[in-house]
Amino acid sequence: MELENRCIREPIAIIVAPNGARKTKHDHASLPMTTDELVAEAIACQTAGAAMIHLHARDANGRHSLDIDDNMAIYHAVKEAVGQNMMVQLTTEAVGLYSPPQQMALVKAVKPEAASFALRELIPDRASEKEGHAFFHWVAEHNIVSQIILYDATDIERYFQLRDAGVLPKTHQHALVVLGRYHQAQQSSPWDLRGLNLARFVEEEIRCAICAFGAREQDCLASAMLLGFDVRVGFENNHVDVAGELAISNAAQVEALRDVAHRFAIPLHSAQSLRSALK
Image 1: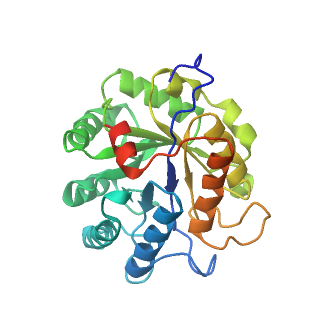
Image 2: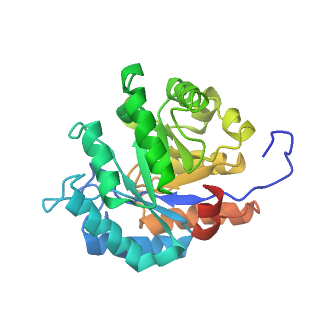
C-alpha cells in the first residue's frame, strides 16, 4: 500500500500474545500457563477475532522454556485445536537463558508455521550475519513465517539494512515493532509511534505489527490500526483494560480491538488471508 492511497483501508491482523515468558498467575489469575489452558485460550481468542497466537511454552515448573519437547507438545496441541483457523507462532525469546544455536535448533526441530525472533538476539553483530543468512533463508525455504522483533529506531534501521543486503529474506517475513520495552516502568504511549520510521514498512509493502507494554496498550494499538499496521495484544505486554482495571481475559482484550476495527470499518484478516499475505 502506497502512502498516497490514504483512502484505502487494507486488512489488518490481530495477533494475541497470551502469556509471555515472565508473568505468572500472581500477575493475573487467568494467565494461561499449561497446555490445556493455552489450548482453551487459543480457541477463545480465535473466536474473538485473533488471526494468530504467539506462544511461550512453559516447563513443568511454569518457567519459560525453549526445550524442544515442551514446545513440540504445546505447538501441536494448539494447532490441533484451532486447525487452519488460526496461525500458531512459537517464540524463540532467550530471556537470558538460551543461545542462538539453541533458538535455531528449536525452530528446525519443531518446524512451526511461524516463529518470532529478536533481531538483536539472532543477528547481534556483523560476525553473526553469515550464520543468520543461512538460518533465515532456511526458515523461508521451509515456508515458516519469521517475525523479526524490533525494539527501537536503531533496530528498524538495521532490519532494513539486512533485508537490502540479502541477509534476511524478503518472503515469509513479518516485522514486529515493540513500544515501551525499555521505557521507565515499561509504559508506552501512542506518541512513541512518531519517533520510528514506520512509513518505510508501508512504502516497501512489508507487513509490520505493533505491540505495546503498559496500561495504554489499547490506545497504542488502536492508533496503529488506524495507520494500517497489524497489532499484537495480550497479557504478555499488559493485563489491564482501558479503564485501568484488571482485564477479564486475553479474549476480552482481542474483542476490544475487534470493536475498534468494526467502528472504523477496518477489515480484519482471517488466518487464511493472513497466510496468503505473508508469503
